[in-house]
Image (cartoon, rainbow, N blue to C red; front, side, top):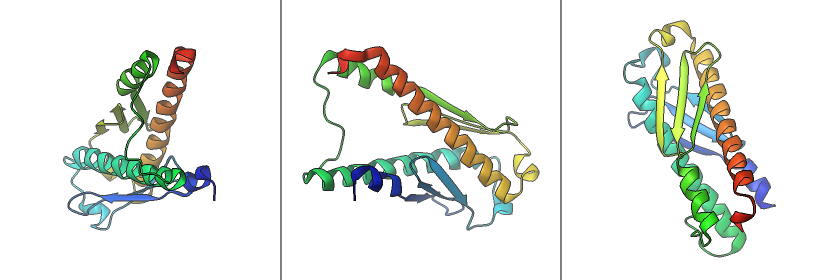
Length: 168
């Protein structure tokens, strides 16, 4: 199987420390949430922090799985990106770390942003859990994450275009 196919089929899961929320990342940019502890028992005041922690763990596991796939393909252990060599590569890494990607639900109730895929911020408007049924909330998170990742990939593409030949 080709590397791109393996990356497309990669599935990564994570849960909040209390097990109240489980997330699954699949198809490169799709997220599915479930609530083993019961959706109605979620504490809305703690929800943004729980989702931020969940996003950090899910992304870290995604990157670990990505490097495992790349290691198997190259037949050498890969645990991180190659060290930048040129000034343009260093600039790319530095500027990419400052990218702030955003996603928001159409009604504005849920917003997620991330700087450099490290510093996550989640906003959930008060009353959202009462307004949304479990499936609606999970679907809203899924669409917000898709928008966020689309924004991240768009900004990285723009950065690569901006740097052009300096990346070589």
